[in-house]
Amino acid sequence: MAANDMESAKSTYDGFIASLKWAVPLISVITLVVIVLIAD
Image (cartoon, rainbow, N blue to C red; front, side):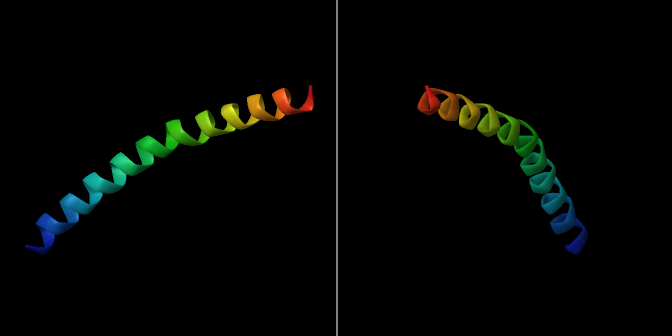
């Protein structure tokens, strides 16, 4: 049963990291755009 839990946890972790790889740059770009719009 513990091995099954580890596989489930690894799957969840891998999905989280994959989402993070897209989310962090996207949030950075949105933040940069907002800063540029406010500065003008």
